[in-house]
Length: 81
Image (cartoon, rainbow, N blue to C red; front, side, top):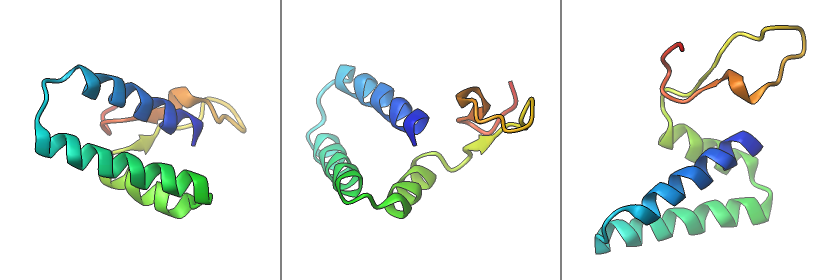
């Protein structure tokens, strides 16, 4: 979950740079609260569901070696690089 959390942190930084939209800010705050609650509860299934909704085309590239768990394998938009 560490690389996914890093990506979420990067997206939150981008979100902070966007102009204020009250409804979007409320929705974002609700999503952050739900994520933080899932993290606090250790609810990996809820985190997985949130990630799947946020990144529907998220895929893992084929491993380059046996046991490859490199974060470089994460393809956020589902398109090969």
